[in-house]
Image (tube, rainbow, N blue to C red):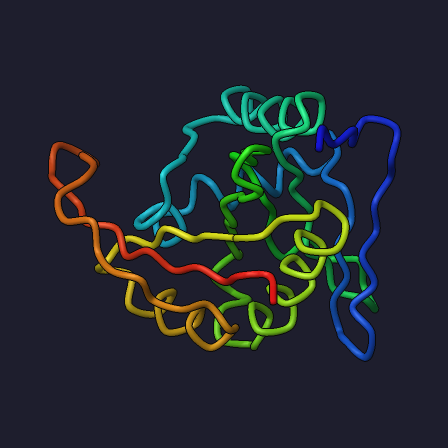
Length: 183
């Protein structure tokens, strides 16, 4: 199940939604930097950047996912204005196990608007229908209670907590594991 994203331009239509998803491109650099340098976003996120130049590595990461067939990330945009709100995608796709990891981040000014509840089901459907995945899993820092509540509302099941499994800023963090299976 090697997935070739290179030749495909994706735009996921969220029917009856205020939002749409499109492929991330180089013109998104400043908005990605805005998100992945914002203290509230990176507090519970595994990636951060201190400059626009450094953020180019994130654009390359998105591109490499597609070239290797190991994932795909999308820009979340407001339908009426085309405003960039955040990013969502699948990565660490493992063909043998038909699974991938889901990730999402939003600019703080768009938190609490129900965007996650509209976007996550479309990414899950994309993973199950287009990529033929059996399992999509999400790892959420245990202290990120808002994200934990939000992912649970989108059909993901809490499977347990990996205690002190990673270090961040010199401190041990625990990750809550959530998953959804292809019915």
